[in-house]
Image (cartoon, rainbow over all chains, first blue to last red; front, side, top):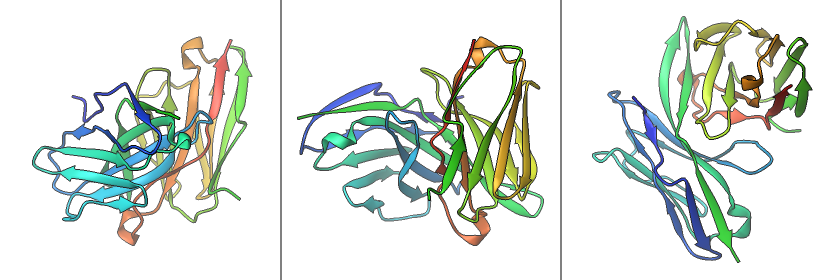
Length: 120
Length: 115
């Protein structure tokens, strides 16, 4: 079963306006992390914002904010004051915290992505 | 100097060739990952190394062989690949969750084309 769902293959926004990218997730874990990454055409995955499942406040990082609704299992990304440089693919991801031996590592599961295009 | 560096950025190889992808991280992280990104598909986790030990192998064909000689370097050795293996291969690293740190940092990827 898919754990991360992004239902918007593509989104368009006018420069300087706000846009919301949707993300829903499915997990039975009590402790998990939610991430948003930006992937420009160059290919690199750029970390934008993180929300922990126990965080009571919605995460914010500059123009990015994460609208976390735990009961609905949604973690939407809000980009305020869009810029032309925001045009890229955006991925929502969920981390399962796993242990192997004496250490732990974060396994990220990604959604299908949303292509955002910012118009001048 | 970027945190996670991948080389080469682009690679074209024949189905009978042998090549290797290299990933180097300068962040002091102790977990490293290989992801495959095919067109119109979500990123797929291939391998995970934690403290230089392979801890996850997601049913990846044996024509892909990972190697982690130390905590800063990760390789993906390729041999007798198929055209459907053409994709963007992304390397990532993260810090042990028990010591803090949350996000994974990615390299710029290697765009692989198998002809």
